[in-house]
Image 1: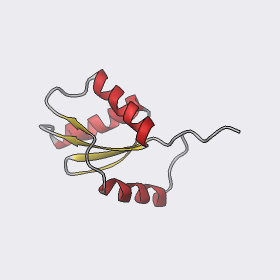
Image 2 (image 1 turned 30 degrees about the vertical axis):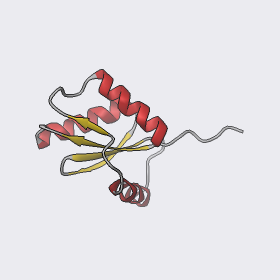
Image 3 (image 1 turned 180 degrees about the vertical axis):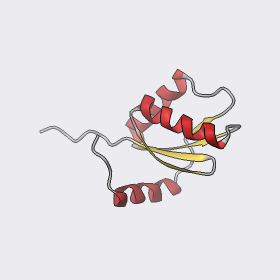
Image 4 (image 1 turned 90 degrees about the vertical axis):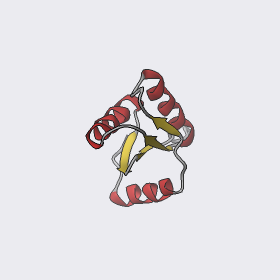
Length: 94
């Protein structure tokens, strides 16, 4: 995946503000099933917002990095208890 420009990231974060959190990560923590669900949602929607419950700020940053790696998506940033991830659809062949 090519790196995004600052302008592209800003545009995507603006779109993400209007999204409702599609996934919620809480006490059970990061499971393979959760990472798989994030990957499926990214492949379907490109842009996914998730909400953290009962996770401290330092752990949240670590989880975002792990989720980006495990899902293949790009972590765009977080505000409060929400985080935004992006995975562009492949360009059409032909």
